[in-house]
Image (cartoon, rainbow, N blue to C red; front, top):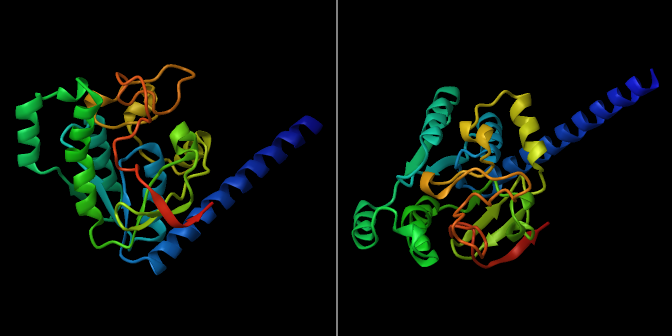
Length: 248
């Protein structure tokens, strides 16, 4: 009887903590919607982004939602996008890379030239992700991401709110302190759709040719650009100086 009571107490405590955690995110999103308009959420349809998309759709629909379609996304990501459009009424804007820039890069480097060097890979990311992101954020006062401390060593210093010097606007990471278990708990509690690749060992999902499943014990982003032995596993979207009103 005692053991059963302790278990129930722990379940109740975990549930309370998760509810409080979720309410903190909702409060932040409402603050962003009120004080930093126009604002936008960069949704890549990873597990973290499904949590934020659900919260934004239900509580702060004036926050714009967009995604970057690089032209090399997995079929599973496109399938999830269609599911999401059926589930939510909130519009999701797609941004694509400049076709001429892609054509010129492929002509010079080959379809999969990003495997040859980090420099070529970063060029590809610049064309397919970074430049379209700049278009998506033009005129915005703030943007929202699903970045978390736990995702990689390079993200340990992330703040809840930062000044994005490169794009000239506020950047918010509402789930920065959430664990992978926290994210899964929300997804399961609200029965959200998610990318099928998560069930196949892909905690982090990017372009199809640049992402693979990870082995037990590897960090979350080990499957991204796995042929590169050193350096932070970043594409350029979240790299650069962040100054000003950083808050922990």
